[in-house]
Length: 113
Length: 117
Image (cartoon, rainbow over all chains, first blue to last red; front, side):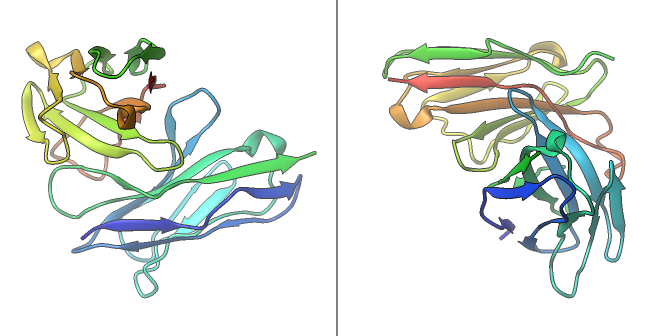
């Protein structure tokens, strides 16, 4: 079946620290991979995506590379800000038609000034 | 462009009562989704509509949950009767282009937080 595993949180960092949130997946076929972010009191927002192996998604200083050989899509940012504090969800969309998203459990990120 | 609208934002009910949630997707979006997000977990798809037809309802507990999307626009999700384990955030999402998966991104509403006492 299809599943996503994220590193457990919360992750607590100081401002300007380097961020990595690990994400691995299990899927049949050739999935697309996504990172969504949820700020307090808001809905999920797409942060970045990659649709095939070796693609790199990037947005707002965040990056993730679709690694088929390790079935991973780790989220990174070189220098976090307090405003990055949120819950981050890794998700996959199976290759078949339907556009269904399968989410990981989410990782809470807290950035201290 | 207006986002996905959901109401109410919060709802508190007692077990065995009924509750309904409403969603207005982004204008022109063909596909609408309802997700259940239990505290500490990622969202789980309950039902997916394309226009006013159901594409996937395999994880919808049909003995108590129902959903409709009349006229292919707004949607309502109902729970009757509610159980304690239904306490969760119910998220609605919509996406524009069912035939182009590369562009078919899901946009989420802020959700309805349900507490069943």
